[in-house]
Image (cartoon, rainbow, N blue to C red; front, side, top):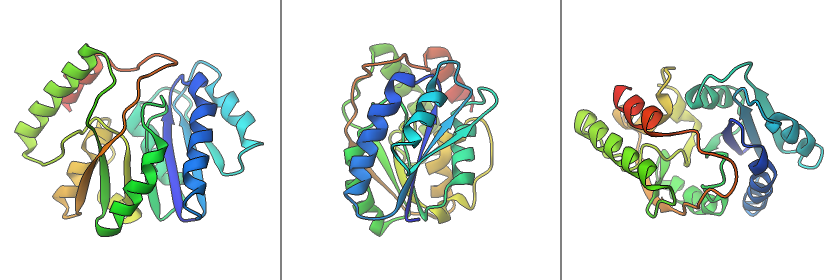
Length: 215
């Protein structure tokens, strides 16, 4: 297995199939073996059912299920445990990340350990952009790192980058920083960010701004 795509999912039933189809198109263009792992983090809609139905059409699709809603970091960690690929790719399930950026990210990965997406033109509502901007500034002030967009989950990295991870609830925000601290080379590139057309955001000012600063 060359590539593992890991997608945390919580109540994103309407976005499951269109995102999976886009991912298959993007990954097949690489002409390498791949798998797509959806980690259902205790969804209360029919997200898991739709993933199960799609598995009959997309053999590369895998489903990991949590018994409850444990958060995005836990979902990523479960995906990392199950992934078979030497190169891992992470993105959100809401279709705001564009799978067609993946080949460009993998090209950059040839010269580094991790490629992080930077949402140059955010397609979110004002409060979400503002809370993310404040949290990023506070984090950078404290950590003194070079990560421009810690809230962007769209990343590609070699499996070796996982070796120094410590499991904690806010891990997904600090994964690139931890890698940078341990000497891994990080490259950051602008990626397409799309408006959310279906479903509802899981983040607001309380669980993005204050939780991010606390973490």
